[in-house]
Length: 283
Image 1 (tube, helix red, strand yellow):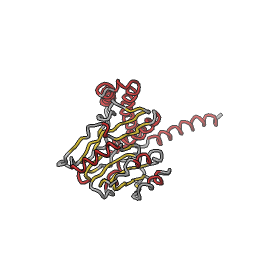
Image 2 (cartoon, one colour):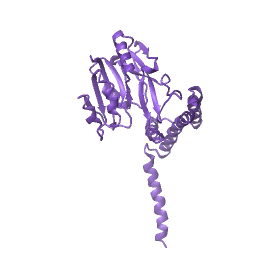
Image 3 (cartoon, helix red, strand yellow):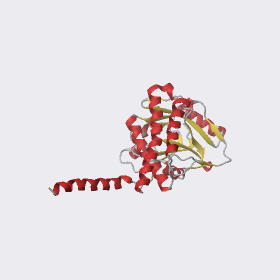
Image 4 (spheres, helix red, strand yellow):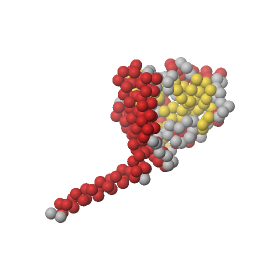
């Protein structure tokens, strides 16, 4: 099979359970570039079976800072960004080939078939056509900022093309279970709260209440999460909790004038504990 002139970028951190499945579906690409954040499992060992282009980036809690770094390592004009927990089904590979051969656009939007808690989502904002991203593009048309969940910077003269057949979308094994979701929620909300704190920004309580209500209403009603039963309800509610967590963390940071308030809170607890202990010493 002739290789397609595409550089596939995969950002990794301890992805030994996912990376082989991912890379098996992009062997058709002429270049695979791995940007690893110093994994301490077998991620890079497995990846080296598929490519010798493995680069390292400072370990972060999220992949965004490494994406532009990876883009600069790509030697092809066409770039496909892929997460380690994603796969490219054969139908999508054929679509990518058609897009390149026919030059259908400069920036391509691709659907995601998201699996949450073991099931393929159809609604709640994670249905294939509800969750589309610009993942295939000519690299001169796009720049990737280093902030978490930030919007790509795209050239105004770019031609856009949307893949509208969900069977031609990524397969994304998103969250295994609620514990997995909460672990990422905790990390991501800390990152976003710190960014707001360092920028000197604040969030008003009324605004937070509105965000929490709006997030749930959007996902459960507008994006039809109610059709997915308890999963739809749980995910709609958890995403509203995401907004609350950012607010709560930011408020603590501002109160203690630190982006790591737990240190100062621990110092306060130690003082209280020492005072309690001292009463025993006085007896």
